[in-house]
Image (tube, rainbow, N blue to C red; front, side, top):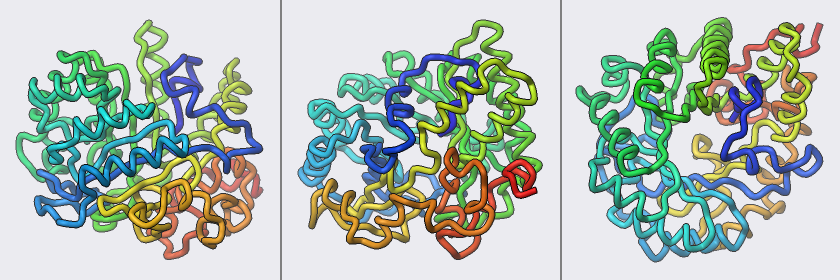
Amino acid sequence: MIGISKLYCNTSEPSDNIRYQHGAKNHAERKPVVVWNCTSACNLSCAHCYAHSDARQNNIELTTEEGKMLIGQLADFGCPVILFSGGEPLLRKDLSELAEFAVSKGLRAVISTNGTLIDAGTAKQLKNSGLDYAGISIDGLANTHDQFRNRKGAFQEALAGIRNCRQAGLKVGLRCTINTANAAEIPGIFDLVLKENISRICFYHLVCSGRGSEIKQSMLSGEQTRRAVDVIIDYTARLHSAGQEMEVLTVDNIADGPYLYLRMLRENHPGAERALKLLQRTGGGNSGVGIAAVGWNGEVYPDQFWRNHSLGNIRERAFGEIWTDLANPFMARLKEKSKYLKGRCAQCRFLGLCGGNFRARAEALTGEAWASDPGCYLSDEEIGLK
């Protein structure tokens, strides 16, 4: 994640201690934030779903007791956050029980949801379970969102979920996956966030995995990406200048960090060097290091998008044992990605900031896990090749 508001506007934000806690020399030792795809089932069928989720329920999901076993393993290993995702996590009837158990074990518990199932009672139940935050997906304004989610009315249902969370006192934020269908609606999404008094928004870059591989043509070009990121930066700066405190992040394209830094240099921004130091502390692409995913059947992955590389199963070995097993050649490479990167990534002067960008997208688009990420939109001159 690239904290646009943090880096450009020097804000203080809730996840600062997690995002910037490690110095540049020990990234591989950090304990990961864990995304648990706790169910494969979903009440929607979204065009970009990395998990190929649909209405079907499978019988290989972790049981409630196995879920608690996983949570105990994460707590024992020192993971700071568990993010309940899916499918649609609210289709698990034991979600509140699992969230409450996670909180009792010292984990920060958050949820990623399409928001359509959050009525007033559900919102109160989630708040009472100790859940800290709900990230609700809004992929454009009404018509665009409904088309992307393959259901008419999904936008209004998600909006109702957002309002119910706020009414219950549960912190809520928006998640938006940028693509060619909604990039022009970024200003309207900011307007929506302001209107609904939402304090956090994450703009995700499209990753072509799962069903996302079927809509590769919706991925922004390099020039389109630059324009979209500039719009996000401009709106963030405008809001903060007007006294509107909002946490704004971009996700899944770490090139946004160097791009933001270069823009700050061009503008003679007084915070440029501070931003550079913070970017160095994040370590860039953290798949297999600062981020992990556990599937509904207990399989452990480097991140939630990179589901073709299982590292082990928590039904057989504890999470911490799997995560630190450098006898696994792929895991060993994940801890030292820079040694194995190829092409532009290997030669980039911002490798220490970016860490090779997003490996799942690189493999999805090139067939090679260590190839350059085609999602990088920085020029050869900008990355020091000319």
